[in-house]
Amino acid sequence: MNRRLLYLLLTHWILSIHAQEPLTYISTKEISVGSLLEVQYDLVIPEGQVLSFTPPNRFFPCKRIASQSNLKGSEFTELEIFSYSDTTFKVGAVTHWKANFSLIPWDTGMLVLQPLPYMLNDRMGYFSSILVQSSFVAAKKGIRIYDIEESVTPLNKEFVFSEFINRYGWIPLLIVLIVVGILLYKKFKRTAPAAPISLTLKEQTLLSIDKLAEKKQWETDQKTHYTELSFILRWYLSARYHINLLERTSFETMLLLRGLSLDEYLQTIIARVLTESDSVKFASNSLSEQEHLVLIEQLKEIIQISSPIDTSHV
Image 1 (spheres, helix red, strand yellow):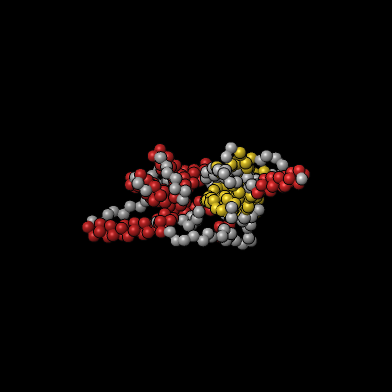
Image 2 (cartoon, helix red, strand yellow; image 1 turned 60 degrees about the vertical axis):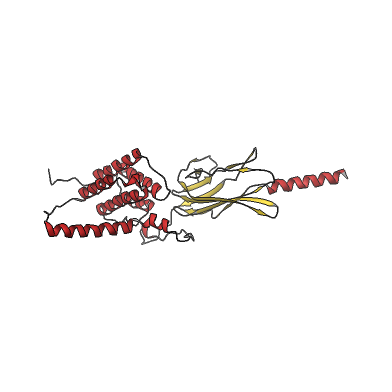
């Protein structure tokens, strides 16, 4: 009788332990740079216990290791968290907790996603680590890299007007500016014809930056301000190097600029301005006055460094 009771208790304990083990799911083991990687965690919360879990911010903790290596690897800081959500629900008498991460790798390598910790009351546990291979989209013969079709599956999202304005609001703004400019031009042309002024690309761009700074729109609407700022930079680079960057993402823009063998320092500050602008436009970050002034000066420095030497006034 005692043996039977001991067997039942042991069986119940083993089943309880396995029921509480955290489960980890991943959408794919091989991912292309710039594509979405879905990671899901599933955990059963025992009755009477409280789960505590703090998700990482902006970038998922990750290490890059050499292929077929058991080394610890180096820190990989290019695995961006695109979105995160979690939910708690019951299946019968069992409480489940699920968390979903959408991740985007911006570099290549054999990646080890680090085990994330959680707390059940005073007991700490860890989700399992994940091994993923990140690589560039395979090149196709006769097709330039920025013409390769992206493999990211579009998310099925409802149309949200505010998101549409935040992402594409610069287009109607540009149209309005052009219309207003035409009307002002016609008005002044009728009153007093102005002497023609021929400005270089460098002068036009610096003038646009000064006008943007004078509006001080970053104090009231930073998303619109940095949309204009990144547009000025992309417009200048497109005209300067004869490539179309107006419809490219920041990642695609940097790939194309690297192909031109630009100076490393110039590439660094271009990437910095684009990254900071994207963080405001898409991640809803807010920059301080000092950070704003630094970005304006870095934008002017890009124009000064990359512009051809003006010999007309020498």
